[in-house]
Length: 276
Image (cartoon, rainbow, N blue to C red; front, top):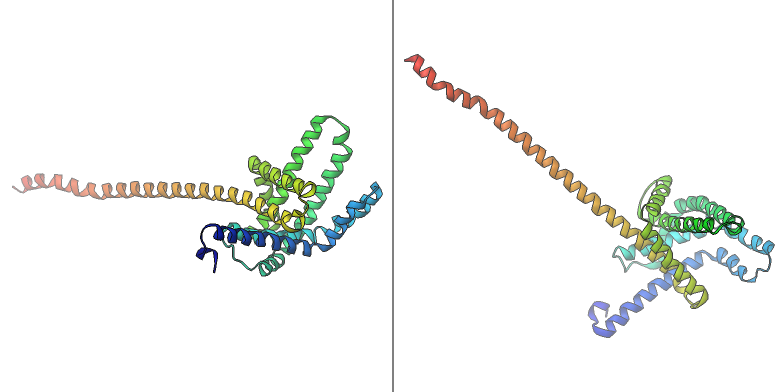
């Protein structure tokens, strides 16, 4: 018996349990593929000095482009299918397929984005915290843009077949050009992370990563659909304009072809008089 055959409360419970399973399995797969990063991240709980912090963060930074970014792209490829309506995909097979097909692009993205985050964090700690509050607010804005850019990069990577720098450029344009969507996406994910680390820590192994990916791709897909609608309207206007011009040209041709006949008809009486 499937959800279509169930009604009422039982059907609702069945659909909810299906979604819980989808999010939890995908999140667990993401963690399994990130085991080296998770190991060093767990050690952050026991850091007691700046030297220890650097010693733990350095392996994470080195591993992130080759481990974290491909696994995250694979997770985005799975939630993309859900949002586009294909909710019954085999999770393990889809995750592995997304991992392999997006590995190169996501790894290259990690090699660019991870240093950007490193520069941002370094500047924020050693500059923004030491000067005026205005500069701190500027860093917060830059952080929101950088976080939205990171999320949009994964969405662009799994949704389009583009060259790497085209993905980077379009991710930046979406992040800056749609500020409300970017801020909303960052706020929702920020609240999710805050709740996961402070209140409901059981979300971390089962839901946090996959829910963040779902929210991020949902925001990106909204922007994409809006752009597609605008493009379709412009295409429709262009076609209507072409049809109008074609009709005008056809009307001009018809008038031109009809003019000699009418002039000949006007000359016929005079020719008759001459013959007389």
